[in-house]
Image (tube, rainbow, N blue to C red; front, side, top):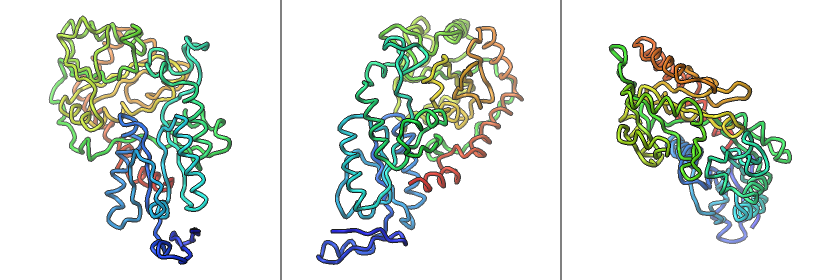
Length: 390
């Protein structure tokens, strides 16, 4: 059975048997999104965007995304497939499957897209490198992502037609490694259909005791290795001080770091939340501030500003660390904390933005940021970008 790519977007098939007749003039509208990660990045990069695209294009079926953990190879489906995504494929078995699709591509003429959102390569201080390179030693992934997995990711990329990344830093980093496969930056977004469009009621007076969310996952520190990681700075000291002195109402999402055990009884802790639960809890808390401490290293420079736009979506002010000599995910934040900030400096920021008018104005700027810069999944600019790639 030979399928010939037609200029009008359909597929013409030699009708030598009944099975081929069924494939005559098929409309190529399916996107097969092969998701590898079932937690955060799998939803942000794949599941949530394609769920929305189904609702956009589902009425006329011009595009029909199908998110799947299975490898679909039925000829009648592949004949209708316009493109497929391989989200964070990084194992020898993954490479084997991508290679099979590469062979099938010759017949079925679909586009192959590889997507990833983490810097995997390099070596940290315990792997023969230094603390500025590789996956940080405080991140449990540093012990789990093997050299074989890193190589598999590169091999899968090279088999595809385009690579998409979540940041410009990742794009610039991986471009020399793809053997000429083009790399596109596709920014992360947050969906209105989960976060809602209802804006918070503006504060009627200065905030006396702000609600503060610390929502960094256990990849930002290590309870096993007893490493403070991204809180190996003034932020851990400030949090303990502010909670003990009853200056803030603290919410910890994703589990409690070992160095906050002394304040456990005075904070509200939410263990790991799914991508669907998380927006509900954040909206329920309605925080005034969301803090995102980081230490300077290559891995953190490669990360996206997802915490920033999530905070803006729930009407909070995101405060993120910026670095002296390297890019930070939070370089575009309205409120920034230098990497060497001290406890007094953090107090100053919080006090300043607890003033009613400045707080309300900054929250409004956050809402406008989501609109103007196409950071909603439903934004026309984001939908157009996805449609152009897939």
